[in-house]
Length: 342
Image (cartoon, rainbow, N blue to C red; front, side):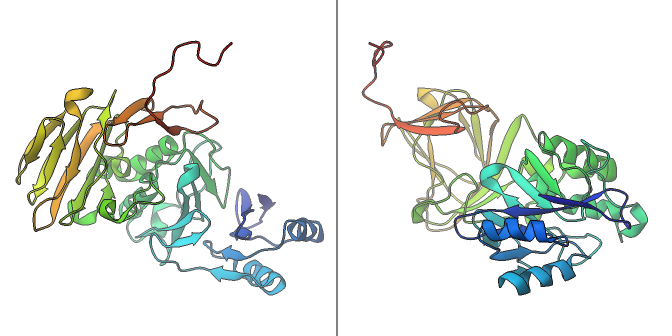
């Protein structure tokens, strides 16, 4: 990170350099001195420059000319930018083409001047008179809430390195009130790639939209998925802690269980208790698309069993298993308590 005081801003201006195996990325560059250039050169130069903030164009052009880097200033929403980074378009802001950068694997988001890190530990927006509709601008920033960020890196002010979701939620509620808790089906962001899985076999690539995080939900998780004929949402599995419920919004999906498959219709509620009896797989065996609301408790510590493949998924928070928050292991054979300790 590079920081500089700028006379036209009441707080520090920040720029970020990400070092990746595919090349290095600079976000919202500031003017660079000889010492910084020597460090950049030791790291292998710059491959891409992501420009989010007005006033950083000259520094971007200078770096691009020196290192042969590509400047990206107007990406599409959810466009893959570079090595685990994705563009998040922010509608109804002060300028067109406002965007943030999501880093899902790190639960981090980088923003330009749509949000300021001020006062320290909290977040703020520009004065209301700078927006055509400040409430609409706040609602547009819910796309960052959708990422459930732990860290929010800002171009101006102090970044938030822990509990960023809570800080952003407080800001948006202060500007839009309880309206941030409502969203319509036609406003959801559907994607064929779910955030929690980098690679999915074709039968599991259904259209999926995160709902709960986007509108302030913390104890309950919910999303909406549309399955084309022949698609499956996930493998057959059971939960140790997270009770679930499905509500069929449209079509005729099926729920496969250990005691048979349930063929559902619009308006059906399906309870999925924890343990053996709640083992389930959502799939579409019909000839038309099916859309389902999936609702569950949000648990940071969880275990899921997959009977078809005899796998066990363990989620922990904070991470305790080789620094990873999730691990998938073969469920059998089971081991004795003192196995490997002699």
